[in-house]
Image (cartoon, rainbow, N blue to C red; front, side, top):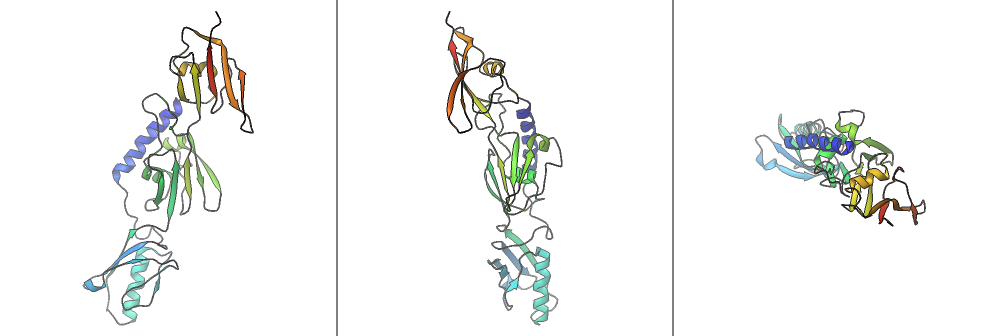
Length: 272
């Protein structure tokens, strides 16, 4: 149960991050892109207060000016650009321009799998794995001590837009290992898989689905199921497992053997 404990502790970290709220990125921290919505104002000129969405070719329109290329610029960069154009066109002398990104749509990261709020999230914080997991509500963990099929696994994957895959050790991440908290970029996908599980039924106290721990034996699995009933036999345990081609087969198994993900244990009655 050690991994579940680490993730539970990790969830506390995520909750702390969420309690701070998602702050808008500093002006020089976010590269504007297609789809972003900009709120633009010019001090003393309320008629020039506009909301403009960045077009697919990375431009916006602004009163009295030709279309402006703003893609890949920061908010402060766009402020300077508009001020320069207004001055050069002798429209306003020494304009005080303010640009605020009110909708972040150009740099989205998908956070999928066993998280509390899967979906797409904008890059408006420090752009690292733990920030995106925080926005997605953190991995699903079992706090009750009764594992279930929805619990998050101990390793996530970060898939880059170009297809490169990076493994993220969630336990190490939440323990403070900075090597796991890698930067993310628009178009990346973070996937938190379901924790490996096994099934046990038949002559056990609590038949059901349980989280598979590292190097878990059949005996430990039966213990997780509450142990044998009075009629159960350790010598009559049947294993159902799938081979490499996905075909299910059935065999007997000893209590000292190691389980694999999605194994099914059936404990039969004693013959005597």
